[in-house]
Amino acid sequence: MSPEEKDAFYLRLKDELTNSTLWPSEYLYKFIVPTSKEKINTIEEIFDNLGAVITTKQSSNGKYTSISINVRMKNPDEVIIKYKEVSKVEGVISL
Image (cartoon, rainbow, N blue to C red):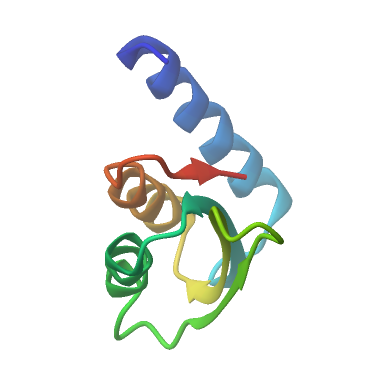
């Protein structure tokens, strides 16, 4: 995805979140990452000290791990900041 496409994606996401949710609100992030303790820990650290409820589940063959993070966010901008932080983890897929 080009930088322009990423910017457009985040603008659309902000619009949708602004129009569909009263803030502050609970938000559910879902990610898939190649199974690696280091990568999972990095994602968990991004949400550290926010009171997030984090659940992980390995795929049946063990190659990938899904990570669900339920956390109270103040506004759409905070949601997007966390997506951008997590996107720096190599191999992560945001759902």
